[in-house]
Amino acid sequence: MKNETLVEFIKEKYYEQEMSAEYELQLTKIIELEKEFTKDFSKAKWREYFNLDLAIGELHSIEIEQVINFIINNFMDNK
Image: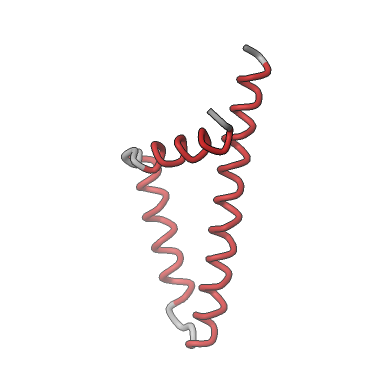
């Protein structure tokens, strides 16, 4: 199995998992902070914020793939 296929398989299985209570609590906290932060945004500021949020999401996706590849490569090297 190629690393690329394995990475996609791991990501797919990870996203199927239920969120932990700790994760749900942190997500709720972030949502509340975001609501408070953005409550007075204009349409233009919302567009800027949305673009920032997309860029952060893309970075997070890259980070997840790098972590998975790091684990796979270290596992393969230490067989």
